[in-house]
Amino acid sequence: MKFTSRAERIEPFYVMEVAKAAALLEKEPENASRPMIHLTIGEPDFTAPPLVQEAAVRAVRAGATQYTAAVGLSELRERISGWYRQRFGIDVPARRIVVTAGASAALQLVSMALIEAGDEVLMPDPCYPCNRHFVMAAEGRPILVPTNASERYQLSADKVAEHWTNKTRGVLLASPSNPTGTSIVKEEFEKIHSLVKSRGGITLLDEIYLGLSHEDAFSESALSIDQDVISINSFSKYFCMTGWRLGWVVVPDPMVPVIERLAQNFFLCPSTVAQHAAIACFEAESIAEYEARRHQFKARRDWFIPALESIGLKVPVMPDGAFYAWVDCSGWFEKLGVSNSWDFSFEVMKRARVAISPGRDFGSAESEKFVRFSTANSMENLRESISRLSALVV
View 1 (cartoon, helix red, strand yellow):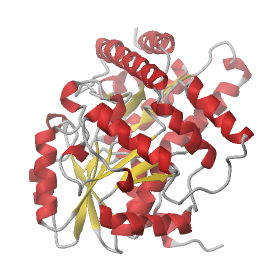
View 2 (cartoon, helix red, strand yellow):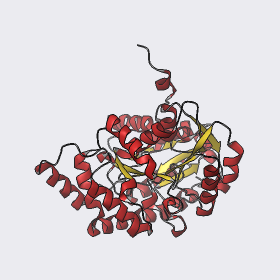
View 3 (cartoon, rainbow, N blue to C red):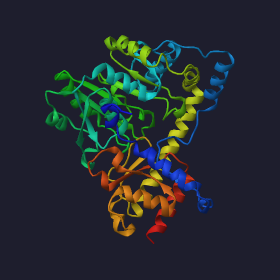
View 4 (cartoon, rainbow, N blue to C red):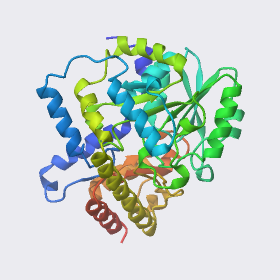
C-alpha cells in the first residue's frame, strides 16, 4: 500500500509511545506489587466536576444529541465570551468564538485557512510536537528556532526578525508552553506581534493552559493586545474535560465564515453532548472547583520542582503555568549508564517504575539532555516518584 508523503512526514507522538511501553511493563506479573507512576501524558487527574457531568446526562436524556451549528452552540459561545470578561477583563465577542472538536481541530482549521504550501511558520524549540505537525499537514513548513533558559524557552522579537524570510507566514507560539510550563512576557509578545503584523504575517497563540497560570505577571490573555491575534483554547486542561474533545478558537471577524465553511466540511460540528455539558463549566460552583484545583496544581509545582532539584535533576526555569517540568537530566547519565534522555527515560521506567517523557518529542535544541515530567498527578504519587528516583542514586 502506498501512503502519501504528507503522512510519511508526520513523526510518531513519542509521548504516547512511551506511555504504551509503560502500560505494557506495568502488566508484567512481577511488577504487580509496584505500580507504575505515570508522569508522561499531560492529562489532569481530575475529571469534569459534578455540574458538568449532570449537564451531559440531562442532554442525553432530553435527546439533545443532534447536530449543532458548525461554529457551536450560541449559548456556549456566549458563556466563553463571559468567561473572558469575568476572568481577564476583556471583551471577546461571541461572534468571534468558534467552538471546535478539541484544540487539535482548532489548529487544523486555522492551518488549513491560513497556510499555503511552502509557507514557513516560526516556532520555539522546544514546543508541543502536534502543533508543528498541523502546519506540515497543511503543506507548510515549521521552522523550529532554538531557545534557551534565559529566554524562558520562548521566542523573542529579535529571533523572529532574524529568522524571517520571504517565505515566512507568521509565528505559532504557546503561553504557557508545553513542555516547559513557561509563558511569554507580555511586553515581548507585544513586540513579536507588532513585528509579525508589520510584515503582513499571522500570530497564532496556543493558550490552552492559560487558565492554569500560577503567576499574576503571566495571567493575561494575549487577546487583550489586538483582535488580530488568533488564540486557540480548550476545555481539556483547566476545565478537566480531556476525553470530551472540545475546544475553541478566537479569530478576527473576517475569518469566522472561512473557519465555519471548513468546519462544516471537516467536522460538521463539535460533540453536541460535550457542548451542552461545557455550558455548566461556567457556573459559579464549577468555577470555584476549577480554582481550587488550580491551587492544587500550583502546590504540586511548589513542592515537586525543589524536590527534583534536590536530587540533581535541574529545572532551568521555574514553570509559571500548566503542569510540567522541563528537566535537564544529563547530570544523571553517568550514574545510570546512559548517554541521552531517551535511554534515561526507559532506564527510569524499568528501574524506578516512573514513566516520563523524553525530550525528542519536543524538538532538537538540547532535547537529548531534557525530559518532561507531568505533575498532573496526585501529591502522593509525586512524593513516591521522588522517593523512587532518589533510591536509584543512593
